[in-house]
Length: 537
Image (cartoon, rainbow, N blue to C red; front, side, top):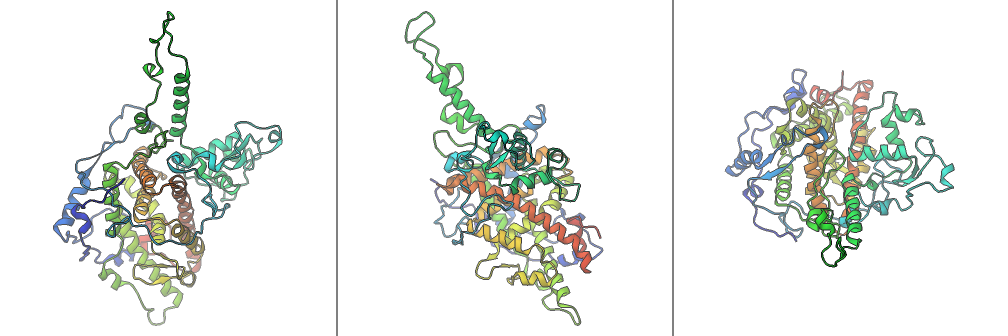
């Protein structure tokens, strides 16, 4: 059981922005671009000795040894994380000062079974507790799953591509090819791009040509991401079965027939002890999480993970709100003769610039970010900023008014976005916010999800393997946190949190399409946003 203990000084540091963002809104002028987003903010000095200690200690605390095992093959790089200072543990949920306090309960509104995140309002039955592993046990999601086709199924066709179906896989009748494709896509958090207009008709030929439309078809026919069992969990089960078989073999007879001196299975190196099963590390790109014990014991959060989560929550709160000076620079009234639509559009984009700048500052303080090449840092920031912004909006969702409370503490409803000419995505965005509210996602889970989104596989990364290994550390921390704090439904909840990543990709793509459509409405994004979102004029 986690105990509440006194915190390190960072928890008591009060935010003081000073002139941190002076001149931020000038970024929207044509002369300023996004190429300097990695530069330190001008005129920034830590406001207190404690915050100075956080800034200096943060990059020294986590030693990500990303260069170990470079002699091994590409997908088997090992990433370890060690702490030189560990002085805190996570507080219990009853701690009133805790940043991990669960939000108030919300409506139980989840996506419908046909939605892109792949689970229905009942939660999808994703396996329970520790046995849920990294995606919920397949028993809960895939009760009808067959290991081979029945005589009736031999004549049925795959709902995705039309090939002969082999059985129910991940909650849908599919062929072996689509089953494997879906499993690989989910375990690797893959992102595909259609080259043919995003409206491909998937058949046995096109399934090889367009992966994006194939994955969309998988989700449309009802395949559930939370039903995918990680490869490491399958490996653990195989080893358990093998160990059990060896254990069940008669071993009381020696080679010459005398009892009591036979060779035991554990002497042969096949018996798995609980401690070994708990410490089993992942290898390859499909395994991403630390497994729980096969005997139902939940592995506790490690001191390193506790410190990591504590720091993520601290920096999430530190870089959540713009300074008062920046907020005063935002346009609050239309200028003389200005159309109300243009005013609303300008107002939203000015706040968006401040939000993206805060996202950049938060990203730069994540353990592991400074280990990446500058080109990869820029690629990650450009790709993740809109998705992280959606997560921040979900944190600021007001269920009473069904609106998003922006940095200036004003609610923005669907009407606000429609008037600004940006209403294409608002319905899906508000649905996503309601979904996160109903899941009661707390500050720690939001912070970990944000880090996972930032360290996601993106196009044109020079060292994609390194990004993947850093992401695994945050995924393991999220899994450990959920297992210890969300029992007895930790498996189902973890599966739903992972499915959020898929929905964020969809919202990010919708945001890009909306930005491209602005030019047809005689509206133009500020240069800063146009460059960071790769929107050509």
